Length: 177
Image (tube, rainbow, N blue to C red; front, side):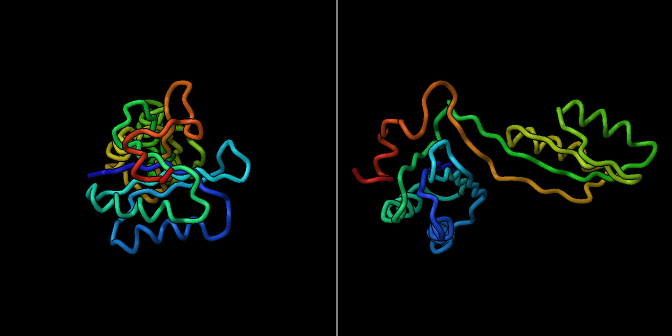
């Protein structure tokens, strides 16, 4: 099963490596591990998307709470109010005949053209992971020369914020009081 954890951790050297090692030691293949500054000074927000059993994830979460610098973690896997976005850069092969068709597809998916050469177009697209998957699917026949994709970042819709979120039953197993 696919799981999504969002964590707040102290911004200190080695913290991300220690978190990554929790998953690696148990043989998890992390689908996405995204980290960046949060709204709180000195605090990093991390989104981890991983595929595996709930039981094994519970073991990892128990180890997570022992990490020095772990402030908060929430399991947002089943939270319907989460918005997920990624960014995609994709270089597509074009000819004089296919260039306009690729430009039209970029417009359809609200992708920006960020670089142009005689044989390629470099597109930038953001949005939900499924949308980016569909964009890649329609571009594939033109020849994808290169692509780079960020991991998913999740944030809740509405007024609620992670650093003020009351612990839910699913969160309780991840952080001790």
